[in-house]
Length: 156
Image (cartoon, rainbow, N blue to C red; front, side, top):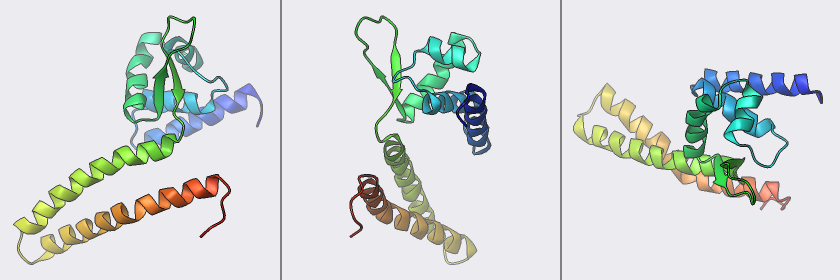
């Protein structure tokens, strides 16, 4: 798959898959465009051209993907336009941001465990709490192992 048509089809397929997983359509298309771009940076105009939409329609998508921590605004010497690029380590950044959401969910679930007496609701809430506690405890080690593997370091 090296042709432009194949690249665009693969990008659209990824975007549709992200939409199926719950991501907003234009945000998913924008993220896919950044992932498949060969340029180091993209402007809103570049993105609009790539997606075949108006520049105004991509501004919300850029904001959403930036808030997720996957892209960042950078200064490009000699340009008056805003340029964006994929962040280094974007996926671990995304996970770190989701981690704080999981912390919030965990606190809310803990209140639920405390609020209900013994029974099915308590068992369900307790299971959810224990699962998220496990994830939060294990995830930093997984990210560390992943980063070591990416650097080609031997497993410990």
